[in-house]
Figure (cartoon, rainbow, N blue to C red):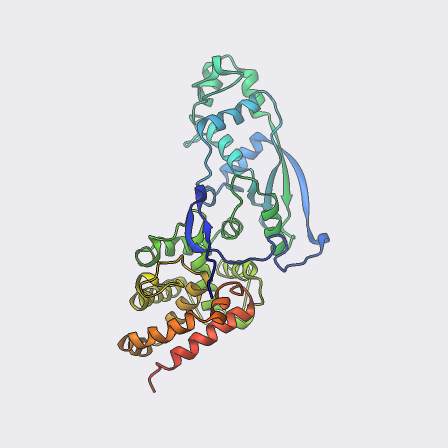
Length: 392
């Protein structure tokens, strides 16, 4: 059966190196919820208060999840000029945690621009210089905030900026997690729509996001995967998170909501939420298991590791289901079983390729890849194969 293989997109519309997985409707994703569970509030906040909160990190500007959507200096300057002209800015959307900290859902570039101009890198007002202004190009073009505030007769302009009132819609902390993610998907308007992993990264900062970053930057990952997978939209981190989720947790606990399953794993690692796990773990153990699985995969499959392609066929993108399944299983098998497989590599690969080319297995890593039946079927087929190589 011919399979229509498409890639997820990275920035600038280029392929990410990861096969696109069929997903349900992005707004319901099999997650019906009571509209009454949506808890939102609105607040108008003076700019000086916003800047104080940014300084003490109760408004978290984490641009690494949108790092490739950075505005150029002209676009930044026009935003500042709007404030100089007292033109109201569009609504900002934030998600509030139980400690009162705000994570920016929509408006990150605008807040970052304001902070960079008014405070600068060293909190001294010496940020970027205005360029390409439309109304104030004469007196203010080429000037930073420090110069405007201290060296020009521009008190009215400075007041217009500093007395600006910003409107926020706040997703309150009692809103269920799946509803937060759904709202995040709906209202984010910053350029290309955020991927589900970028949303998880934004909402669940902590040990989990740090570990994912560490692993996609590790020499082992870069050797085996990194050259072909672009992580600018966190495609690589989602692959690693799928490994961690199915390695730590029982497959039977996956009920068909992949976004929720992965999100709960991040929250568990962050100690914000508890889910049943099948192994006792720490960061070092997880990292070691992952790296062991990568090296074993590369020894077995070479450049076709985690792909539908094999032998002399044209190399296809990495398949999420194959990546998750093979890293989990190769991390778990004993050294003796692995050595037996390597000693009989040609026979093993021939048997595996027959499975890989089977229509039912293709469905289990394709259109049913994120459904319980697909998870069950692909693991069952490959576990049966691995058992043939276990030493008595």
